[in-house]
Image 1 (tube, rainbow, N blue to C red):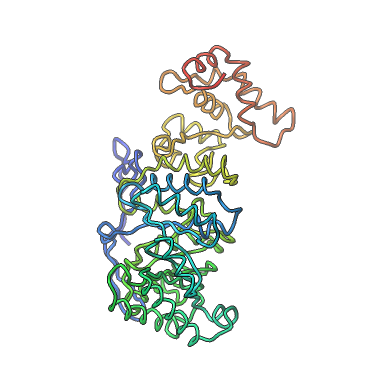
Image 2: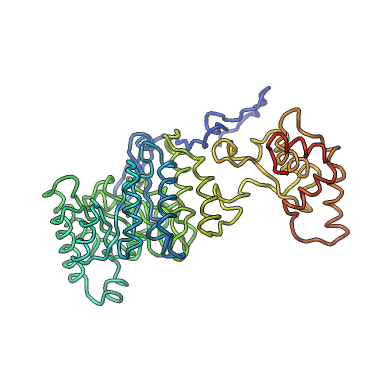
Length: 465
């Protein structure tokens, strides 16, 4: 065992090459790694991530609508525009998937197409039925997802057929799509419970054979659907649950390149996000997501989480406008009636708020101590504090100064907060309160004990009278 000597520098090492406070922290790697997959040594070079065109795709208007009342046409259009702004001019959010079955769904597609935005590209979703492709072609879409269930749970118990019958039916629909001039994206539903060598590989190899005979824009894509969230990232885990092995196998043995491969996960075991990110690392170029992770049952990988992961992996903003997440969150809550937990990362109203006085003291000293990055700049959400019995005078001081819009030398001292701090303490010690102090209550205390500062803040436009 190597022994290490204490290093005591004159100034702190804040690792700012990684934790640049003005951007999302970079994800760094030590270099290439060798991993054994299916008995073979496979070399993975994280540097490839810088060169590859990895992307995010969206299914907010398809899977996302299977867990909530349908979005109105206006809501679809507004969220689509915000998504385009978030993904930026490089199309980091490359595609968005829509239902096509009812009049409202088709109107939403038409209205979004009228925006003439370069990204996201609008794609459809249909059953594996030949007649449905007429609807896709009529809508003028170039690509559509189609359900090609892959596990015996679905083939035998849901579809009431066998593997040979499912294989035949799927290929017929794929060929019908190509004949109609529509690129098929085969959704391998429940792939993490499927027989990979016995059904999945023969099917995707057939898709690869078809791909060799058609133009580039019609070559079938494959979406790996972890329908029940069974996928795991652990080294040495076996198929069909191993996400790394699944991705590598479909590429190396199935003949489907990473740029035609996509991951669609679910969060039943709290692994939706990490499984999606892992797919990027192992060669799958597209990760399918929804806004706020809102989707059927436990939901899908959250789009906002994928955006942050993308920036961290690339080490660059890549044209992404993270401030759009503030407007998306506000619109989802106010106009769409979505209940977003206040502590949900990036979208929650108080995801970067602390309730601990010692944390508030740290934030007052240097907000980098307890804030993940410059959330005021990147997300339009400055660090905040929740006022509870744990907040102390440091928490009260931070809340009041933030509310009044005071910074630097203009910030009020803790002495100025003494009466408000005493009131907070009395709420818990004398009144027996067990809930947090509301914003409205804090504002009333400021008006009562700091009336001059409140009026000055009103004149500056920091607060409303």
